Length: 394
Ligand SMILES: *Cc1c(COP(=O)(O)O)cnc(C)c1O
Image (cartoon, rainbow, N blue to C red; front, side, top):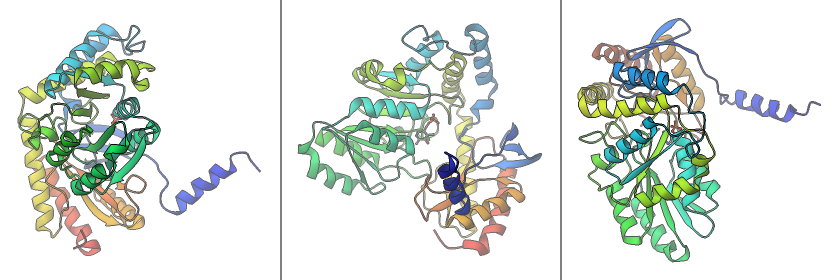
C-alpha cells in the first residue's frame, strides 16, 4: 500500500466520470486563432476580449518597462517592490473606474481573497450570488463570516435575506459578479446597489469580464447598467480584456488604505512584474483612445448570437461576449467539444465543479480579433454539429 494510493483512486474516479482535468499546449496565437497539436483552430475560449495582449502598443509598453526595471519586481509592494508603473496603473484604474483610489494584487483570485477576508469576519454576514466565481466563494468561506447564497440574479430573495438577517450582524457584505463568467448574463446591479444603500450593507462587484468591455467607455457593468460607482467596491482583473495579469480593487480611499494594511494576499507576496503593470496601463489608454476594438467585439457578438438564434438556439444570456451553449451532461459536452476540435474550433467543455452538476456546457467567447469569416465558419460547424444533437434545449 502506497501512502498516496487514496489520491490515485480519487483521480481514477474523476477519470471514470469524465471529470479529469488536463490542458492542451497552445503552440502559437494569431488574431482569433490558436495552433494546437499542429492545427490552426478558431479560438472560441479566450478572455482576451479586445485582443490587447497582442496590441503593438501594449506589447511595447511591457518591453520598455521590463528592460528598464527588470522581469520581476524583486520585492513585495510595501518593501521595495513598488515601481512607477504600479503607481501609474493604480491612478489610471481609479480614474477609469471613477473611484477615489485603487490597489493592485498579483491576480484577481488574490484580490478577491484579500478584499473579502480583510473586510468581514466572525460576527459579520457575507451573502453572494449562487453562481459566483470560485475565487469569491473561497474568499467568503475563508473569511469565517457567516456565508449565505441567494439564487442567481434574484434581487428579491436577496432583499428578503437582508431584511430577515440584517440586525443580527455587525457588518453585511454583498458579493456578486457584474457580468457572470460562465453564463454571460448580468447581475441586477441597480436593484442590488439600491438594496445595499438602503440596508447599509457593503457591495463588492467582481467585474472581471465587464471591465474594458461594457458601457459607453468600457468601464464595466456598472457603467453599462447606469449605476453610480460611489461607495461600491469594484474588483477587476488585468488578465482578461486588459491583456495582462493582475487583480485590483477600485473604491473609496479608506477601503484601499485599509486593504494596504490588512490584506494578506496584498502584503505577503511579490509585486506584479513592472512590465505587466505597464502593459495594463497602456491597455487602459488603448481602450479609451481606440474604441474600434470594442466596436469590433460588439459586431462579432451580434454576428455570433444572431447566427446561433437563426439556427434555432434559444440563448439564455444577454448579448455579451460570453455565449454559453448549454448541453447538460458531461459526456455529451465532452463529445461535442471533441467534435468541434476535429472541425477546427477550440471550445473546451466546461464541467462541474466549475459549473453546477447537470449544467455542463460549451462556453463560447468572442474577441475583437475574430474576423467575420472566422465566425461564419464557426457558425457553419455549430449548425451542423449541434442541430440534431440538442436542438431546442436551452
Ligand atoms: C478570472 C476571474 C477571476 C480571477 O482573476 P485572475 O486574475 O485570473 O486570477 C475572478 N473572478 C472572476 C469572475 C473571474 O472570471
